Image (cartoon, rainbow, N blue to C red; front, side, top):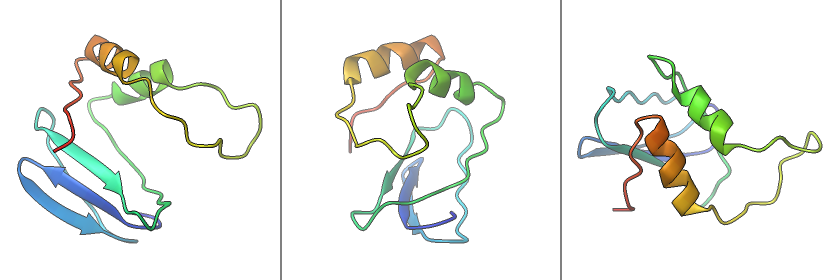
Length: 94
C-alpha cells in the first residue's frame, strides 16, 4: 500500500492495510479489494504470471488529459464478458 486504506479478502481471510501494508493472494483463489470510504487510495500491484495488464488494457480507456476522470458507473456486463476472455471470473459482492 502506498496511500490510503484498502480492505483485502482472499480465500476467506480479510484484512485492512494502510501505507506500508502488503497483501498476497495465490492465483486461482477468489479475492477482492475495496478502497475505504475515506478514499482515495493508491497501491502497487504485481501480478504473475502476466495477464492482468492485458485485461486492464482491454477494459480501460485512454484519458484525454493527465487528471483523474470523474468516477463512472461500470458496465458490469461488459466487464464480466471481457474478464472471461482472460480467464478471470468476476464474483458478486459478498
